[in-house]
Image (tube, rainbow, N blue to C red; front, side, top):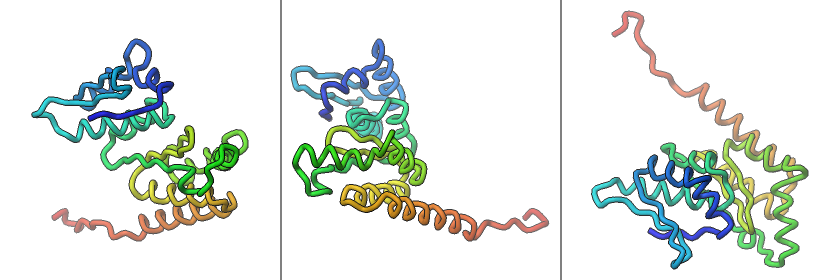
Amino acid sequence: MYVRIPEDRVGVLVGTGGETKRELERRTRTAVVVDEEEDAIRVSAPDEADPGGVLAARDVVLAIGRGFSPPRAFRLLKEGTYLAVLDIKQVSGKREKGAVRRIRARVIGAKGRARERLEELSGCAVSIYGSTVALIGEERELARAQRAVQLLLRGSEHNTVFRLLQRGRREDSFEALSAPSELVPPDGG
């Protein structure tokens, strides 16, 4: 399987002395090769290996390519954690370089505060790279964060979006409290 990532992110994928690449290969039981002829990253595994390892390694490579640090990208190796990539140009409908730069700044916020708040309220890791916003999180977190980012990209007020995320967190807390728990009879059986 081949994956393309920006050239300036290949060094991050490889890591100092190849450390990040080796760690990814070890944890996913795959081979990750930087194919300079194809200008891509090749991810493969022996035929008898679990194909899930190749898919997990691919997702980690894509996440690093979208600006995540290796430790944050390795979060994708946890069961039930996914990557989503939103194209700013597609979601906002804006194609001009200046407009994309302005919209990116809305997601980042002053001194990165909007991005930090988005991460805090959604539970997702967020990376803004080029004309994309990438998210890493569990399914429920990811759906909520994607909706929030889409609203920001389309011009919704930050406070409105953050209140929406807070309400979602409260609903999750309420559901956890009201979920029926398995009761064990006092006699233990």
